[in-house]
Image (cartoon, one colour):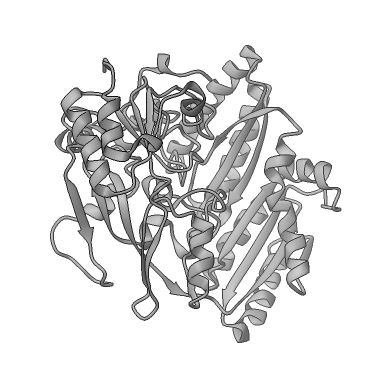
Length: 467
């Protein structure tokens, strides 16, 4: 898409001069996200209402320049990168919690509300919003909904789409649409809510979200189990769930991850093992001690060499330190990484990790695996120095081979990060040519000029970006 000069004066009339950012320094702050890709927008605007966004989108249709919705920029796949310039529409001013209904257990929020702040607010009413992406202390609900974010609690509670009852959005033509209901049941017409959730900003810009809430659990119990063999750890994951216990989190760290964390924290983690499971159950206090004992017994029966149950909140925090320290610990191995969030059926986790070990040897790379074993979502981190072009090329080949392996195992390329730019060349591998075309036709129907977040999901021109 060829961009001509943007109508800056009309932007100013629409949102106010103070909400139009044009200097290089201001625009640079909106040029990147957690994917490490970057592209400089021509302008950034900070609208304060759905009506202002609608006017901006109508200008984009009139003058045919691309627009890029943006939350907090925490995404891992480049979904908010302004490919080829154009206009970034930041939702940070739309940051109000508009309504919390504790009786009917829903809330209405604007997209710029920080996820962690929202969770703390609803907890004051004895309510719980389960989706918990790793970035929840600074990512926003609008971005979470756009990418259908997941997190450790997905094994029990599901992902973001399971908590979106309805929404208000500005479509790519500038019209404002309202979908869904405030009621728990509603089956009228096509499910446009679920179509827009996870659409990565390609089909509309969210301006209000109606979110389902549930009663907050009374208490939690946290356990750690150490396994000499990773096959035993994976079997244990399945056995726990087969025994009618659904943990709220069930995390796995492989041997390379354990080694990295121990080198970083020196907390006495066992190094003569292939896997560590961090397990948490929540619910009614009177039942949790029994669940913890049953889980501990299942772990021992399936080959755990060591188990530990947290005795109090301080002890629980100590057990969680290892999981939370992974990111800084990996930073000591290499300055950069490629973080993929592939997902396979739970029983095939050992097959996946053995295949990843083979890839590491084949391409002479350090690859660590950890993540949400309860739902088969394994974060595969290829450690590298991006300035080393040979190492980067080997890593990119390893990623391509990893994706082929995952699909052969009946898995998916992404359990929570989405497609964005980084996975777009492989998108069709999973959904097939017919599925790809069906999605593209939906995109064309709602966005005939392809102005809304172009270059995402559907393969972009990579010359726009720098790694």
